[in-house]
Length: 87
Image (cartoon, rainbow, N blue to C red; front, side):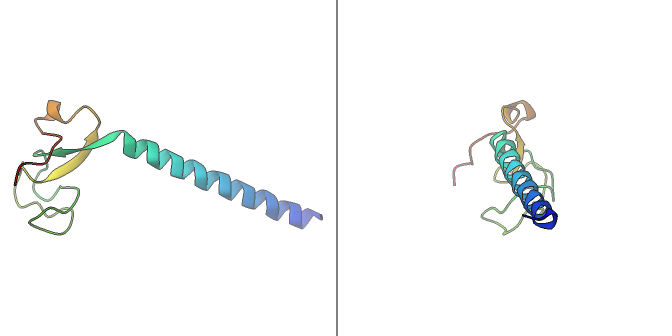
């Protein structure tokens, strides 16, 4: 193996290691969050609901069906609920 091939192999190994580290960090970060209903401000919800199809479309503050991702365990402290409202 010449120097060029060794350099390419090292670069590929670094790229693969970085990609797997980033993916693992993203999974850990998602595990540390939970949906919190009823605390989103107008236009600051995180995802779709039954009344619209996208994030940032909440019409008013603190609507029961609108949610945001928050740190796990902090939802009720903020005045929200971790379960969706009954339909």
